[in-house]
Length: 221
Length: 240
Image (tube, rainbow over all chains, first blue to last red):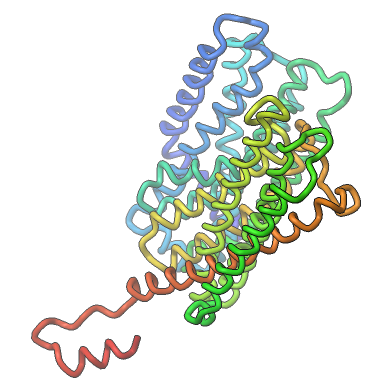
């Protein structure tokens, strides 16, 4: 537990010192939200209907930058190898990195919500529920994303490989998060929010467990 | 399979598989009665359904190879993993193509966002991505471990993808069982299923051998300097 907290502190510190990068990733996400609206045209009803999809696509695209960046720094001066020499398990390093990535993505997601409200007129008063969906969705993105980023950071063509591996895997997250966010924006007369949130939770549990089990083999061999 | 792939068995499996596939396809195309609603269009099922079964089987075999590799660290499981994953992706691509050919006259569209179709497409991209990962990693050990890990993660994801898209939308008919399919259709389906099974098993065995040979060339000891060639060089060569 101490090793995990130390790893988490290290990753939060890294993020804080590179906070300019987080602002740049948020700007990238906001720019994608602006660009998606050109695919629909100035139809305010259609834009509002598609707002949840655009938000999550923007966040998914931004996540590849954020996840890749989180391991970019660990590759400099062979920092990762130094970390593995410390008396801490690889699992603690993984969970530290994944929690920090999840927090960063959730923050970017929450910051993109006002952009979505302004551009698509798609707001909700259930802000806590929306925050819950964003946290669950980003937990689902960051668990496999951290595992794959650890692999792709050490390869050629890393910018191509991370999305190629991650996007098909996170289809359930994208579907469930878009549905849940849509229900919050457009109304939920049938009470369908809970099953979609449960799917997000189930995906996150499976992948956080798998990531912790397999990360050691990825970085130690 | 690595040992078996050096004998005549793989080529025999390919030959038997090809013959069975020809017999099953002739039976399905010329002998079996046409389906009452779809007519001749239905005959693509004699190859489409067995392809679906075998694609799942090949990817399951790849998953088993990935688990065994992580437990044993034996190269033979990595070679089998590479072969099985390639076969699974090829069969899944064939499955999508056959499905699209069948969907156009029956559903009126080449593609529909139905659970089975979407899951298969996701599966193709997920496992295709792992093949791309293998192509970009030069270190054989890292390549083997990473692709085994990615294969396990992708395989564990398939049921979640399936249920998520099933809840999202549904059009594809429920899975057929011998009880729901007329007896006249059973034999061509069964013969083709075994034909494709033998065909891919033989091809996987042959592809495993190719992977083993490539691995041998990758991790072979460096040749001695030209001046040192002689008995030592022959000794190091004979180690392989």
